[in-house]
Image (cartoon, rainbow, N blue to C red; front, side, top):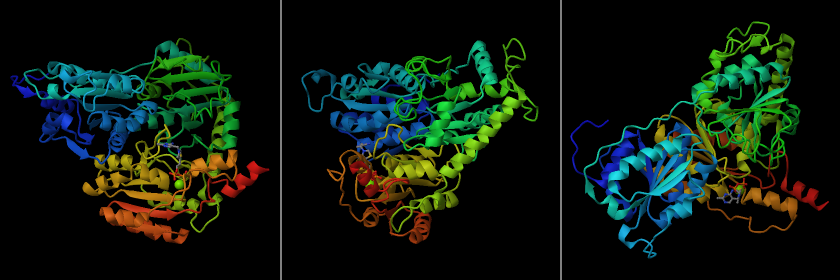
Length: 585
Ligand SMILES: Cc1ncc(C[n+]2csc(CCOP(=O)(O)OP(=O)(O)O)c2C)c(N)n1
Ligand SMILES: [Mg+2]
Protein backbone atom coordinates (compact mmCIF):
# COMPACT_ATOMS: atom_id res chain seq x y z
CA UNK A 1 0.00 0.00 0.00
CA UNK A 2 1.16 3.51 -0.78
CA UNK A 3 1.95 5.11 2.58
CA UNK A 4 3.49 8.34 1.30
CA UNK A 5 1.37 11.50 1.69
CA UNK A 6 -0.97 11.91 -1.23
CA UNK A 7 -0.06 14.62 -3.69
CA UNK A 8 -2.18 15.94 -6.54
CA UNK A 9 -1.36 14.19 -9.82
CA UNK A 10 -2.43 14.46 -13.42
CA UNK A 11 -4.85 11.61 -14.18
CA UNK A 12 -2.61 10.42 -17.01
CA UNK A 13 0.22 10.18 -14.48
CA UNK A 14 -1.97 8.27 -12.04
CA UNK A 15 -2.57 5.77 -14.82
CA UNK A 16 1.15 5.37 -15.54
CA UNK A 17 1.80 4.98 -11.81
CA UNK A 18 -0.69 2.09 -11.74
CA UNK A 19 1.09 0.43 -14.67
CA UNK A 20 4.38 0.71 -12.84
CA UNK A 21 3.16 -0.54 -9.48
CA UNK A 22 1.59 -3.55 -11.19
CA UNK A 23 5.05 -4.44 -12.49
CA UNK A 24 4.97 -3.04 -16.03
CA UNK A 25 8.42 -2.71 -17.52
CA UNK A 26 7.52 -2.32 -21.20
CA UNK A 27 4.76 -0.65 -23.17
CA UNK A 28 4.23 -0.74 -26.93
CA UNK A 29 2.48 2.19 -28.56
CA UNK A 30 1.70 4.45 -31.46
CA UNK A 31 1.18 7.96 -30.09
CA UNK A 32 -2.00 10.00 -30.43
CA UNK A 33 -3.13 13.42 -29.31
CA UNK A 34 -5.94 11.68 -27.43
CA UNK A 35 -3.69 10.44 -24.62
CA UNK A 36 -0.96 13.06 -24.26
CA UNK A 37 -1.08 13.07 -20.40
CA UNK A 38 -0.25 9.34 -20.43
CA UNK A 39 2.63 9.90 -22.84
CA UNK A 40 3.80 12.66 -20.52
CA UNK A 41 3.65 10.28 -17.58
CA UNK A 42 5.77 7.79 -19.49
CA UNK A 43 8.42 10.45 -20.06
CA UNK A 44 10.14 9.74 -16.75
CA UNK A 45 8.37 6.67 -15.41
CA UNK A 46 11.26 4.26 -15.89
CA UNK A 47 9.08 2.09 -18.14
CA UNK A 48 10.62 1.14 -21.48
CA UNK A 49 8.52 2.55 -24.28
CA UNK A 50 8.62 1.00 -27.75
CA UNK A 51 7.13 3.35 -30.29
CA UNK A 52 5.85 1.37 -33.26
CA UNK A 53 4.87 2.22 -36.82
CA UNK A 54 1.39 0.71 -36.87
CA UNK A 55 -0.99 -0.23 -34.06
CA UNK A 56 -1.44 -3.79 -35.33
CA UNK A 57 2.28 -4.29 -34.83
CA UNK A 58 2.18 -2.59 -31.42
CA UNK A 59 -0.66 -4.85 -30.26
CA UNK A 60 1.16 -7.93 -31.56
CA UNK A 61 4.28 -6.87 -29.66
CA UNK A 62 2.22 -6.53 -26.49
CA UNK A 63 0.71 -9.95 -27.18
CA UNK A 64 4.16 -11.46 -27.66
CA UNK A 65 5.22 -9.86 -24.36
CA UNK A 66 2.22 -11.49 -22.68
CA UNK A 67 3.05 -14.86 -24.23
CA UNK A 68 6.67 -14.74 -23.10
CA UNK A 69 6.15 -13.43 -19.57
CA UNK A 70 2.66 -14.61 -18.66
CA UNK A 71 1.92 -11.06 -17.48
CA UNK A 72 -0.27 -8.59 -19.39
CA UNK A 73 1.42 -6.94 -22.34
CA UNK A 74 0.54 -3.25 -22.46
CA UNK A 75 -0.40 -1.49 -25.69
CA UNK A 76 -1.35 2.17 -26.03
CA UNK A 77 -3.11 3.50 -29.11
CA UNK A 78 -5.16 6.45 -30.16
CA UNK A 79 -8.88 6.67 -30.90
CA UNK A 80 -10.84 4.86 -33.61
CA UNK A 81 -8.21 4.60 -36.39
CA UNK A 82 -5.53 3.40 -33.99
CA UNK A 83 -7.89 1.13 -32.10
CA UNK A 84 -9.13 -0.40 -35.37
CA UNK A 85 -5.59 -1.25 -36.39
CA UNK A 86 -4.91 -2.76 -32.97
CA UNK A 87 -7.77 -5.23 -33.34
CA UNK A 88 -5.47 -7.56 -35.30
CA UNK A 89 -3.37 -8.11 -32.17
CA UNK A 90 -6.39 -8.25 -29.88
CA UNK A 91 -7.76 -11.17 -31.86
CA UNK A 92 -4.50 -13.06 -31.38
CA UNK A 93 -4.52 -12.43 -27.61
CA UNK A 94 -8.09 -13.65 -27.50
CA UNK A 95 -7.59 -16.92 -29.42
CA UNK A 96 -4.17 -17.59 -27.92
CA UNK A 97 -5.30 -16.97 -24.30
CA UNK A 98 -2.70 -14.26 -23.77
CA UNK A 99 -2.97 -11.52 -21.14
CA UNK A 100 -3.00 -8.08 -22.76
CA UNK A 101 -4.29 -4.64 -21.82
CA UNK A 102 -5.09 -2.21 -24.61
CA UNK A 103 -5.37 1.40 -23.50
CA UNK A 104 -7.16 3.58 -26.03
CA UNK A 105 -7.48 7.33 -26.14
CA UNK A 106 -11.09 8.45 -26.34
CA UNK A 107 -12.88 11.65 -27.31
CA UNK A 108 -13.74 14.05 -24.52
CA UNK A 109 -16.76 13.12 -22.48
CA UNK A 110 -18.84 16.19 -23.37
CA UNK A 111 -18.81 15.35 -27.08
CA UNK A 112 -19.98 11.74 -26.68
CA UNK A 113 -22.70 10.28 -28.90
CA UNK A 114 -22.49 13.01 -31.56
CA UNK A 115 -20.16 10.94 -33.72
CA UNK A 116 -17.39 13.28 -32.76
CA UNK A 117 -14.05 13.16 -34.56
CA UNK A 118 -12.76 9.56 -34.32
CA UNK A 119 -15.46 8.57 -31.86
CA UNK A 120 -15.91 4.86 -31.40
CA UNK A 121 -17.94 2.76 -28.99
CA UNK A 122 -15.16 0.48 -27.76
CA UNK A 123 -17.46 -1.73 -25.74
CA UNK A 124 -19.44 -2.49 -28.88
CA UNK A 125 -16.48 -2.82 -31.25
CA UNK A 126 -14.26 -4.94 -29.01
CA UNK A 127 -17.05 -6.54 -26.99
CA UNK A 128 -16.91 -9.99 -28.60
CA UNK A 129 -13.11 -10.10 -28.68
CA UNK A 130 -12.07 -9.17 -25.17
CA UNK A 131 -12.64 -10.39 -21.64
CA UNK A 132 -13.61 -6.90 -20.54
CA UNK A 133 -14.08 -3.56 -22.31
CA UNK A 134 -14.74 -0.42 -20.32
CA UNK A 135 -14.31 3.32 -20.30
CA UNK A 136 -12.89 5.23 -17.35
CA UNK A 137 -15.22 8.14 -16.81
CA UNK A 138 -14.00 9.24 -13.39
CA UNK A 139 -10.32 9.89 -12.91
CA UNK A 140 -10.49 8.89 -9.23
CA UNK A 141 -11.43 5.35 -10.32
CA UNK A 142 -8.27 4.83 -12.43
CA UNK A 143 -6.61 2.68 -9.70
CA UNK A 144 -9.74 0.52 -9.47
CA UNK A 145 -10.05 0.04 -13.26
CA UNK A 146 -6.36 -0.72 -13.77
CA UNK A 147 -6.30 -3.20 -10.90
CA UNK A 148 -9.28 -4.99 -12.37
CA UNK A 149 -7.76 -4.91 -15.85
CA UNK A 150 -4.61 -6.69 -14.66
CA UNK A 151 -6.58 -9.28 -12.71
CA UNK A 152 -9.06 -9.97 -15.51
CA UNK A 153 -6.41 -10.17 -18.25
CA UNK A 154 -4.27 -12.72 -16.40
CA UNK A 155 -6.71 -14.81 -14.38
CA UNK A 156 -8.73 -17.84 -15.49
CA UNK A 157 -8.23 -18.18 -19.22
CA UNK A 158 -6.07 -15.12 -19.91
CA UNK A 159 -7.06 -12.71 -22.65
CA UNK A 160 -7.29 -9.09 -23.71
CA UNK A 161 -8.88 -6.19 -21.87
CA UNK A 162 -9.66 -2.81 -23.44
CA UNK A 163 -9.88 0.40 -21.46
CA UNK A 164 -10.92 3.62 -23.17
CA UNK A 165 -9.55 6.85 -21.70
CA UNK A 166 -11.48 10.04 -22.40
CA UNK A 167 -9.04 12.79 -23.27
CA UNK A 168 -10.43 15.34 -20.82
CA UNK A 169 -10.49 12.79 -17.99
CA UNK A 170 -6.76 12.14 -18.49
CA UNK A 171 -6.08 15.87 -18.21
CA UNK A 172 -7.71 16.30 -14.77
CA UNK A 173 -5.60 16.82 -11.69
CA UNK A 174 -6.63 14.85 -8.64
CA UNK A 175 -5.53 13.37 -5.35
CA UNK A 176 -6.09 9.64 -5.17
CA UNK A 177 -4.46 6.62 -3.51
CA UNK A 178 -2.78 3.95 -5.65
CA UNK A 179 -3.99 0.36 -5.75
CA UNK A 180 -1.87 -2.47 -4.36
CA UNK A 181 0.04 -4.62 -6.86
CA UNK A 182 -2.24 -7.22 -8.44
CA UNK A 183 -2.11 -10.81 -7.37
CA UNK A 184 -3.51 -13.89 -9.11
CA UNK A 185 -4.58 -16.57 -6.62
CA UNK A 186 -3.27 -20.12 -6.98
CA UNK A 187 -5.71 -22.79 -8.15
CA UNK A 188 -5.48 -26.34 -6.77
CA UNK A 189 -7.11 -29.63 -7.76
CA UNK A 190 -9.55 -31.17 -5.30
CA UNK A 191 -8.33 -34.46 -3.72
CA UNK A 192 -11.12 -36.44 -5.42
CA UNK A 193 -10.05 -35.11 -8.82
CA UNK A 194 -6.51 -36.28 -8.19
CA UNK A 195 -7.82 -39.69 -7.06
CA UNK A 196 -9.90 -40.01 -10.19
CA UNK A 197 -6.91 -39.14 -12.38
CA UNK A 198 -4.83 -41.72 -10.52
CA UNK A 199 -7.46 -44.41 -11.11
CA UNK A 200 -7.68 -43.65 -14.82
CA UNK A 201 -3.90 -43.57 -15.15
CA UNK A 202 -3.56 -46.93 -13.41
CA UNK A 203 -5.84 -48.58 -15.94
CA UNK A 204 -4.90 -46.86 -19.18
CA UNK A 205 -3.10 -48.98 -21.77
CA UNK A 206 -2.62 -46.20 -24.34
CA UNK A 207 -2.71 -42.83 -22.53
CA UNK A 208 -1.73 -39.62 -24.30
CA UNK A 209 -1.16 -36.17 -22.88
CA UNK A 210 -2.01 -33.13 -25.02
CA UNK A 211 -0.53 -29.88 -23.78
CA UNK A 212 -1.69 -26.45 -24.85
CA UNK A 213 -2.96 -23.06 -23.78
CA UNK A 214 -1.17 -20.55 -21.60
CA UNK A 215 -0.35 -20.20 -17.88
CA UNK A 216 2.64 -22.51 -18.11
CA UNK A 217 6.21 -21.68 -17.12
CA UNK A 218 9.62 -23.31 -17.46
CA UNK A 219 9.33 -25.16 -14.13
CA UNK A 220 5.90 -26.61 -14.87
CA UNK A 221 6.97 -27.76 -18.32
CA UNK A 222 9.86 -29.63 -16.73
CA UNK A 223 7.69 -30.99 -13.93
CA UNK A 224 5.13 -32.28 -16.38
CA UNK A 225 7.92 -33.92 -18.35
CA UNK A 226 9.06 -35.76 -15.22
CA UNK A 227 5.50 -36.83 -14.46
CA UNK A 228 4.97 -38.12 -18.00
CA UNK A 229 8.21 -40.04 -17.87
CA UNK A 230 7.37 -41.68 -14.55
CA UNK A 231 3.96 -42.74 -15.77
CA UNK A 232 5.01 -43.47 -19.35
CA UNK A 233 2.61 -41.04 -21.04
CA UNK A 234 3.48 -39.87 -24.54
CA UNK A 235 3.26 -36.08 -24.85
CA UNK A 236 1.70 -34.21 -27.75
CA UNK A 237 1.60 -30.44 -27.97
CA UNK A 238 -1.15 -28.41 -29.57
CA UNK A 239 -0.70 -26.25 -32.65
CA UNK A 240 2.11 -23.72 -32.07
CA UNK A 241 2.58 -24.75 -28.43
CA UNK A 242 5.83 -26.56 -29.09
CA UNK A 243 7.70 -24.90 -26.28
CA UNK A 244 5.62 -27.02 -23.86
CA UNK A 245 7.78 -30.10 -24.47
CA UNK A 246 11.41 -30.25 -25.62
CA UNK A 247 11.85 -32.35 -28.76
CA UNK A 248 14.42 -34.55 -27.05
CA UNK A 249 12.14 -35.50 -24.17
CA UNK A 250 11.77 -39.30 -24.32
CA UNK A 251 7.96 -38.99 -24.20
CA UNK A 252 7.69 -36.29 -26.88
CA UNK A 253 5.52 -37.67 -29.67
CA UNK A 254 4.78 -34.63 -31.84
CA UNK A 255 2.55 -31.64 -32.44
CA UNK A 256 -1.07 -31.43 -33.42
CA UNK A 257 -0.90 -28.73 -36.04
CA UNK A 258 -1.56 -28.40 -39.75
CA UNK A 259 -0.07 -31.18 -41.84
CA UNK A 260 0.11 -33.55 -38.86
CA UNK A 261 1.78 -36.93 -39.26
CA UNK A 262 -0.99 -39.42 -40.23
CA UNK A 263 0.64 -42.10 -38.05
CA UNK A 264 0.37 -39.81 -35.06
CA UNK A 265 -3.32 -39.26 -35.77
CA UNK A 266 -3.79 -43.04 -35.93
CA UNK A 267 -2.13 -43.36 -32.52
CA UNK A 268 -4.45 -40.69 -31.18
CA UNK A 269 -7.51 -42.51 -32.42
CA UNK A 270 -6.35 -45.62 -30.57
CA UNK A 271 -5.75 -43.81 -27.28
CA UNK A 272 -7.86 -44.89 -24.33
CA UNK A 273 -7.06 -41.92 -22.08
CA UNK A 274 -6.51 -38.31 -23.08
CA UNK A 275 -4.98 -36.03 -20.50
CA UNK A 276 -5.56 -32.56 -21.96
CA UNK A 277 -3.72 -29.88 -20.01
CA UNK A 278 -4.13 -26.15 -20.54
CA UNK A 279 -5.64 -26.18 -24.01
CA UNK A 280 -9.12 -26.33 -25.46
CA UNK A 281 -8.65 -29.16 -28.00
CA UNK A 282 -9.76 -26.49 -30.43
CA UNK A 283 -10.27 -26.73 -34.19
CA UNK A 284 -6.68 -27.13 -35.40
CA UNK A 285 -5.40 -29.59 -32.76
CA UNK A 286 -8.61 -31.61 -32.99
CA UNK A 287 -8.06 -31.75 -36.78
CA UNK A 288 -11.31 -29.94 -37.57
CA UNK A 289 -13.16 -31.42 -34.58
CA UNK A 290 -12.72 -34.93 -35.95
CA UNK A 291 -10.45 -36.52 -33.33
CA UNK A 292 -12.72 -36.53 -30.31
CA UNK A 293 -16.46 -37.10 -30.09
CA UNK A 294 -18.54 -34.02 -29.30
CA UNK A 295 -19.89 -33.78 -26.68
CA UNK A 296 -18.76 -37.26 -25.59
CA UNK A 297 -15.26 -38.34 -26.59
CA UNK A 298 -14.76 -42.08 -27.13
CA UNK A 299 -11.60 -41.88 -25.00
CA UNK A 300 -11.61 -41.18 -21.30
CA UNK A 301 -10.93 -37.46 -21.03
CA UNK A 302 -9.20 -35.77 -18.14
CA UNK A 303 -9.23 -32.06 -18.85
CA UNK A 304 -7.21 -29.52 -16.90
CA UNK A 305 -8.03 -25.92 -17.81
CA UNK A 306 -7.91 -22.66 -15.86
CA UNK A 307 -11.41 -21.60 -16.87
CA UNK A 308 -14.37 -23.39 -15.37
CA UNK A 309 -16.45 -22.12 -18.28
CA UNK A 310 -14.24 -23.92 -20.80
CA UNK A 311 -14.43 -27.30 -19.06
CA UNK A 312 -17.29 -29.41 -20.50
CA UNK A 313 -18.13 -26.64 -22.99
CA UNK A 314 -17.34 -28.65 -26.12
CA UNK A 315 -16.13 -31.98 -24.73
CA UNK A 316 -17.62 -33.56 -21.65
CA UNK A 317 -14.72 -34.63 -19.48
CA UNK A 318 -14.63 -37.70 -17.23
CA UNK A 319 -12.53 -35.64 -14.88
CA UNK A 320 -12.61 -31.84 -15.19
CA UNK A 321 -9.97 -30.03 -13.19
CA UNK A 322 -10.30 -26.24 -13.03
CA UNK A 323 -6.65 -25.33 -12.59
CA UNK A 324 -4.01 -23.27 -14.31
CA UNK A 325 -1.43 -25.69 -15.79
CA UNK A 326 1.47 -24.28 -13.76
CA UNK A 327 -0.55 -24.53 -10.53
CA UNK A 328 -1.75 -28.05 -11.30
CA UNK A 329 1.57 -29.41 -12.48
CA UNK A 330 3.11 -28.00 -9.31
CA UNK A 331 1.18 -30.64 -7.36
CA UNK A 332 2.34 -33.60 -9.45
CA UNK A 333 5.80 -34.14 -8.01
CA UNK A 334 4.27 -34.66 -4.59
CA UNK A 335 1.67 -37.05 -5.96
CA UNK A 336 3.90 -39.65 -7.47
CA UNK A 337 6.76 -41.71 -6.09
CA UNK A 338 10.14 -40.55 -7.26
CA UNK A 339 11.56 -44.06 -7.38
CA UNK A 340 11.37 -44.61 -11.12
CA UNK A 341 13.39 -47.80 -10.73
CA UNK A 342 10.54 -49.53 -8.87
CA UNK A 343 8.67 -52.15 -10.90
CA UNK A 344 5.39 -50.33 -10.57
CA UNK A 345 4.43 -46.77 -9.91
CA UNK A 346 1.58 -45.30 -8.00
CA UNK A 347 -0.22 -42.14 -7.04
CA UNK A 348 -1.27 -43.83 -3.81
CA UNK A 349 0.56 -41.48 -1.53
CA UNK A 350 -1.26 -38.47 -2.92
CA UNK A 351 -2.78 -36.41 -0.16
CA UNK A 352 -6.36 -37.46 0.25
CA UNK A 353 -5.98 -40.72 -1.70
CA UNK A 354 -7.78 -43.32 0.40
CA UNK A 355 -6.38 -46.73 -0.43
CA UNK A 356 -3.16 -47.90 -1.99
CA UNK A 357 -3.45 -50.49 -4.74
CA UNK A 358 -6.39 -49.38 -6.91
CA UNK A 359 -4.23 -46.72 -8.48
CA UNK A 360 -1.01 -48.69 -8.73
CA UNK A 361 0.13 -49.17 -12.28
CA UNK A 362 1.00 -52.85 -12.88
CA UNK A 363 4.60 -53.29 -13.98
CA UNK A 364 3.73 -55.04 -17.25
CA UNK A 365 1.32 -52.27 -18.19
CA UNK A 366 3.96 -49.67 -17.43
CA UNK A 367 6.48 -51.54 -19.55
CA UNK A 368 4.01 -51.67 -22.41
CA UNK A 369 3.42 -47.94 -22.11
CA UNK A 370 7.14 -47.25 -22.04
CA UNK A 371 7.55 -49.19 -25.26
CA UNK A 372 4.77 -47.14 -26.82
CA UNK A 373 6.44 -43.91 -25.70
CA UNK A 374 9.65 -44.99 -27.37
CA UNK A 375 7.86 -46.06 -30.53
CA UNK A 376 6.00 -42.73 -30.86
CA UNK A 377 9.10 -40.73 -30.00
CA UNK A 378 11.15 -42.54 -32.63
CA UNK A 379 8.41 -42.04 -35.16
CA UNK A 380 8.38 -38.30 -34.46
CA UNK A 381 12.13 -38.18 -34.88
CA UNK A 382 11.88 -39.78 -38.29
CA UNK A 383 8.94 -37.54 -39.31
CA UNK A 384 10.85 -34.41 -38.38
CA UNK A 385 14.20 -35.41 -39.82
CA UNK A 386 15.04 -32.61 -42.28
CA UNK A 387 17.36 -34.94 -44.19
CA UNK A 388 14.34 -37.02 -45.19
CA UNK A 389 12.96 -34.21 -47.37
CA UNK A 390 13.93 -33.19 -50.86
CA UNK A 391 11.85 -30.76 -52.91
CA UNK A 392 12.26 -28.91 -56.22
CA UNK A 393 14.64 -25.97 -56.38
CA UNK A 394 18.22 -25.01 -55.58
CA UNK A 395 17.43 -23.92 -52.02
CA UNK A 396 16.38 -26.85 -49.81
CA UNK A 397 14.31 -25.92 -46.76
CA UNK A 398 15.20 -29.18 -45.02
CA UNK A 399 18.85 -28.16 -45.11
CA UNK A 400 17.94 -24.67 -43.87
CA UNK A 401 16.15 -26.18 -40.88
CA UNK A 402 18.96 -28.64 -40.14
CA UNK A 403 21.37 -25.73 -40.13
CA UNK A 404 19.19 -23.69 -37.74
CA UNK A 405 19.02 -26.69 -35.41
CA UNK A 406 22.79 -26.90 -35.49
CA UNK A 407 23.70 -23.26 -34.98
CA UNK A 408 20.96 -21.65 -32.88
CA UNK A 409 21.27 -21.89 -29.10
CA UNK A 410 18.59 -23.79 -27.18
CA UNK A 411 17.18 -20.56 -25.76
CA UNK A 412 16.88 -18.81 -29.15
CA UNK A 413 13.39 -17.38 -29.64
CA UNK A 414 11.73 -18.34 -32.93
CA UNK A 415 8.80 -16.33 -34.22
CA UNK A 416 6.47 -16.70 -37.18
CA UNK A 417 3.09 -15.65 -38.52
CA UNK A 418 0.91 -17.67 -40.88
CA UNK A 419 1.69 -19.34 -44.17
CA UNK A 420 2.95 -22.65 -45.51
CA UNK A 421 6.53 -21.56 -44.83
CA UNK A 422 5.79 -22.00 -41.11
CA UNK A 423 5.29 -25.75 -41.64
CA UNK A 424 9.04 -26.10 -42.02
CA UNK A 425 9.62 -24.58 -38.63
CA UNK A 426 6.87 -26.47 -36.85
CA UNK A 427 7.87 -29.82 -38.22
CA UNK A 428 11.65 -29.63 -38.40
CA UNK A 429 12.89 -27.07 -35.89
CA UNK A 430 14.03 -28.44 -32.53
CA UNK A 431 12.24 -26.42 -29.87
CA UNK A 432 14.18 -27.25 -26.75
CA UNK A 433 12.98 -24.90 -24.02
CA UNK A 434 9.98 -23.03 -22.68
CA UNK A 435 9.79 -19.41 -23.81
CA UNK A 436 11.32 -20.00 -27.21
CA UNK A 437 8.26 -19.91 -29.47
CA UNK A 438 6.14 -16.95 -30.51
CA UNK A 439 3.55 -18.00 -33.04
CA UNK A 440 -0.17 -17.21 -33.39
CA UNK A 441 -2.45 -20.20 -32.84
CA UNK A 442 -5.00 -17.84 -34.41
CA UNK A 443 -3.21 -18.16 -37.76
CA UNK A 444 -2.71 -14.41 -38.09
CA UNK A 445 -0.33 -13.28 -40.79
CA UNK A 446 2.17 -10.57 -39.97
CA UNK A 447 2.84 -11.65 -36.39
CA UNK A 448 6.43 -12.87 -36.70
CA UNK A 449 8.22 -9.55 -37.15
CA UNK A 450 6.50 -7.58 -34.35
CA UNK A 451 6.84 -10.62 -32.08
CA UNK A 452 10.57 -10.72 -32.80
CA UNK A 453 10.89 -7.01 -32.03
CA UNK A 454 9.10 -7.49 -28.70
CA UNK A 455 11.19 -10.54 -27.81
CA UNK A 456 14.45 -8.76 -28.49
CA UNK A 457 13.29 -5.71 -26.51
CA UNK A 458 12.59 -7.99 -23.55
CA UNK A 459 15.69 -10.14 -23.90
CA UNK A 460 18.50 -8.13 -25.51
CA UNK A 461 21.01 -10.92 -24.87
CA UNK A 462 19.08 -13.74 -26.49
CA UNK A 463 19.08 -14.72 -30.14
CA UNK A 464 15.78 -13.89 -31.85
CA UNK A 465 14.98 -15.29 -35.30
CA UNK A 466 11.80 -14.61 -37.26
CA UNK A 467 10.71 -16.92 -40.05
CA UNK A 468 8.39 -15.05 -42.42
CA UNK A 469 6.76 -15.64 -45.77
CA UNK A 470 6.87 -12.96 -48.44
CA UNK A 471 3.16 -12.32 -47.87
CA UNK A 472 3.39 -12.51 -44.10
CA UNK A 473 6.39 -10.21 -43.75
CA UNK A 474 4.76 -7.36 -45.63
CA UNK A 475 1.70 -7.30 -43.40
CA UNK A 476 3.83 -5.64 -40.70
CA UNK A 477 7.12 -5.13 -42.54
CA UNK A 478 7.24 -1.51 -41.40
CA UNK A 479 8.19 -2.69 -37.91
CA UNK A 480 11.62 -3.48 -39.32
CA UNK A 481 12.12 0.27 -38.79
CA UNK A 482 11.30 -0.25 -35.10
CA UNK A 483 13.98 -2.95 -34.91
CA UNK A 484 16.48 -0.53 -36.46
CA UNK A 485 15.40 2.34 -34.20
CA UNK A 486 16.06 0.32 -31.05
CA UNK A 487 19.16 -1.41 -32.38
CA UNK A 488 17.66 -4.90 -32.14
CA UNK A 489 19.75 -7.52 -33.93
CA UNK A 490 16.84 -9.75 -34.92
CA UNK A 491 17.33 -11.98 -37.95
CA UNK A 492 14.43 -12.42 -40.36
CA UNK A 493 14.60 -15.48 -42.59
CA UNK A 494 12.23 -14.40 -45.31
CA UNK A 495 10.96 -17.30 -47.39
CA UNK A 496 9.95 -15.81 -50.73
CA UNK A 497 7.99 -18.02 -53.11
CA UNK A 498 6.38 -15.09 -54.93
CA UNK A 499 2.89 -15.85 -53.74
CA UNK A 500 0.37 -16.21 -50.97
CA UNK A 501 1.36 -19.84 -51.16
CA UNK A 502 -1.11 -21.29 -48.68
CA UNK A 503 -4.08 -19.90 -50.56
CA UNK A 504 -2.57 -20.93 -53.90
CA UNK A 505 -2.29 -24.46 -52.48
CA UNK A 506 -6.00 -24.46 -51.63
CA UNK A 507 -6.79 -23.02 -55.07
CA UNK A 508 -4.91 -25.78 -56.81
CA UNK A 509 -6.75 -28.37 -54.72
CA UNK A 510 -10.22 -26.95 -55.28
CA UNK A 511 -10.00 -24.97 -58.53
CA UNK A 512 -6.93 -26.39 -60.29
CA UNK A 513 -5.15 -24.06 -62.69
CA UNK A 514 -7.34 -21.05 -61.89
CA UNK A 515 -4.81 -18.88 -60.11
CA UNK A 516 -6.70 -15.95 -58.63
CA UNK A 517 -5.27 -13.12 -56.49
CA UNK A 518 -2.46 -15.21 -55.03
CA UNK A 519 0.57 -14.10 -57.11
CA UNK A 520 2.95 -11.52 -55.62
CA UNK A 521 5.58 -9.33 -57.23
CA UNK A 522 8.05 -8.68 -54.47
CA UNK A 523 10.72 -6.12 -53.73
CA UNK A 524 14.37 -6.99 -53.23
CA UNK A 525 14.09 -7.67 -49.50
CA UNK A 526 17.85 -7.47 -48.90
CA UNK A 527 17.80 -3.95 -50.33
CA UNK A 528 14.71 -3.22 -48.22
CA UNK A 529 16.69 -4.16 -45.10
CA UNK A 530 19.58 -1.94 -46.13
CA UNK A 531 17.27 0.98 -46.94
CA UNK A 532 15.97 0.84 -43.36
CA UNK A 533 19.49 0.80 -41.94
CA UNK A 534 19.71 -2.95 -41.43
CA UNK A 535 21.67 -5.76 -43.05
CA UNK A 536 20.44 -7.68 -46.10
CA UNK A 537 21.36 -11.00 -47.70
CA UNK A 538 20.00 -12.76 -50.76
CA UNK A 539 20.09 -16.55 -50.83
CA UNK A 540 19.26 -18.64 -53.89
CA UNK A 541 21.00 -21.94 -53.10
CA UNK A 542 21.40 -24.29 -50.17
CA UNK A 543 25.15 -23.70 -50.14
CA UNK A 544 24.70 -19.93 -49.82
CA UNK A 545 22.42 -20.14 -46.79
CA UNK A 546 24.88 -20.98 -43.99
CA UNK A 547 27.41 -18.20 -44.73
CA UNK A 548 24.64 -15.66 -45.32
CA UNK A 549 23.00 -16.56 -42.03
CA UNK A 550 26.31 -16.30 -40.24
CA UNK A 551 26.91 -12.82 -41.60
CA UNK A 552 23.40 -11.86 -40.52
CA UNK A 553 23.93 -13.29 -37.02
CA UNK A 554 27.29 -11.58 -36.67
CA UNK A 555 26.47 -8.12 -38.02
CA UNK A 556 24.81 -6.78 -34.87
CA UNK A 557 22.06 -5.10 -36.92
CA UNK A 558 18.52 -6.15 -37.69
CA UNK A 559 18.93 -8.38 -40.73
CA UNK A 560 16.87 -9.95 -43.47
CA UNK A 561 18.04 -13.13 -45.16
CA UNK A 562 15.99 -13.11 -48.33
CA UNK A 563 15.59 -16.78 -49.34
CA UNK A 564 14.20 -17.58 -52.77
CA UNK A 565 12.14 -20.74 -52.59
CA UNK A 566 10.94 -22.58 -55.67
CA UNK A 567 7.15 -22.05 -55.78
CA UNK A 568 6.81 -25.74 -56.62
CA UNK A 569 7.96 -26.55 -53.06
CA UNK A 570 4.55 -25.79 -51.63
CA UNK A 571 4.72 -28.18 -48.63
CA UNK A 572 7.35 -30.66 -47.40
CA UNK A 573 5.33 -33.44 -49.04
CA UNK A 574 3.68 -31.91 -52.11
CA UNK A 575 4.48 -29.86 -55.20
CA UNK A 576 2.17 -27.29 -56.76
CA UNK A 577 1.96 -29.10 -60.08
CA UNK A 578 1.41 -32.36 -58.22
CA UNK A 579 -1.55 -30.86 -56.38
CA UNK A 580 -2.95 -29.49 -59.63
CA UNK A 581 -2.60 -32.80 -61.39
CA UNK A 582 -4.17 -34.64 -58.48
CA UNK A 583 -7.14 -32.25 -58.34
CA UNK A 584 -7.61 -32.37 -62.09
CA UNK A 585 -7.56 -36.16 -62.34
C1 LIG B 1 -4.09 -11.36 -41.58
C2 LIG B 1 -4.36 -12.51 -42.46
N1 LIG B 1 -4.79 -12.31 -43.72
C3 LIG B 1 -5.04 -13.36 -44.54
C4 LIG B 1 -4.85 -14.64 -44.10
C5 LIG B 1 -5.12 -15.82 -45.04
N2 LIG B 1 -3.86 -16.45 -45.37
C6 LIG B 1 -3.36 -17.49 -44.68
S1 LIG B 1 -1.87 -17.97 -45.18
C7 LIG B 1 -1.85 -16.82 -46.42
C8 LIG B 1 -0.68 -16.70 -47.36
C9 LIG B 1 0.63 -16.57 -46.66
O1 LIG B 1 1.58 -16.20 -47.61
P1 LIG B 1 3.12 -16.19 -47.29
O2 LIG B 1 3.39 -15.46 -46.05
O3 LIG B 1 3.85 -15.72 -48.50
O4 LIG B 1 3.44 -17.71 -46.98
P2 LIG B 1 3.39 -18.98 -47.97
O5 LIG B 1 2.07 -19.63 -47.74
O6 LIG B 1 3.56 -18.49 -49.35
O7 LIG B 1 4.51 -19.84 -47.51
C10 LIG B 1 -3.01 -16.05 -46.40
C11 LIG B 1 -3.31 -14.95 -47.34
C12 LIG B 1 -4.43 -14.81 -42.75
N3 LIG B 1 -4.26 -16.01 -42.22
N4 LIG B 1 -4.17 -13.74 -41.97
MG1 LIG C 1 4.75 -16.83 -49.94
